[in-house]
Length: 403
Ligand SMILES: Cc1ncc(COP(=O)(O)O)c(C=O)c1O
Image 1 (cartoon, helix red, strand yellow):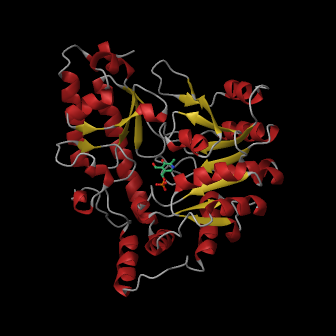
Image 2 (cartoon, protein in one colour):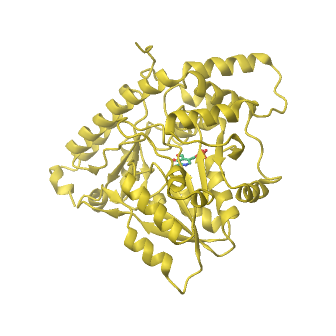
Image 3 (cartoon, rainbow, N blue to C red):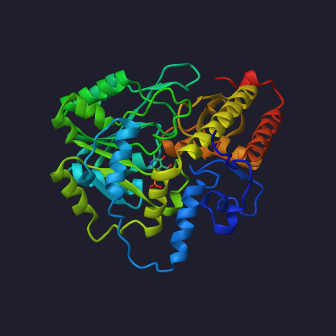
């Protein structure tokens, strides 16, 4: 019997200036945008942090000496992937890791591939680091524009273009934010073969890996797929991960890169030198607590997220808004292009009706919206009721909104 955990209390996050809520301070808007959760972190994490705070000395801190080995053991148990503790490079954030990967893998001007729609920093890392972005849109396979797959034909054509600088790195979001799907084993195999053929590095951001909602398909690290293809290919991988999404620790700033090849790891570390601080000591304490004693909490979280996801799907169905039914993460991706035809900017329009969604434009898909459903049911119900009232206010029946 798992313990009961509290996913229904509404906390005053503005008291600690939570970014998600600060955006709408003073306005009656329920924030469903940035990817963090309106749930407290696991009790084991809260207890460990409280003990650390009580210690009272907050001078410079290293990662606990046993932590890399603990993390390696966790990888073996969770994902069936054997990593060496020395492959781990600690980071105070994942977006930083994407940018460091660009610097470590590519010469100036070389091209960096990303599949859109995608979490916006994937689209900006290349240019920010003086390299060239190569955006390959995911293919939609249904009329509603809510089922996505990798467009291998477009990928092959773009990477093979003789008149362009070499494509050197793929930034993979796996599992994928915002489409909320797991790539199939066949797709991952095909992608690994593609990377081998074109001599690409891969930086795979796997921060959503522990939020697989239905639990039937375990997460498969892309580097494991690469390693199974050939040991040499593994040496071209960087895997990014962290506890921020799963255990709601984004504000503490802790992540890591797993870099099997020592030369690549050295280049990555060189790019960090004198620029990137150590993660905060509290973040190591929190991470260690998630490895020890948070599995019951995570399972309870997933049950709550499944319930919320299903509620969101049913509500969007009633509104006539095409949407994904995510296999992973707490993010639903909504095709609001037809609604945009009626109301202009749909994100702004929903804000005016009291709900703050993410605008798809930043992800490379204008007319889409992203809805974060990781919040207590009472707030989610109110947000969905506001959205329904907004749609009802348009007057005509919802089929008119379908593209
Ligand atoms: C795929 C992905 N990577 C990275 C991040 C952000 O990570 P960090 O805050 O550690 O930079 C997010 C946040 O939503 C994300 O979805």
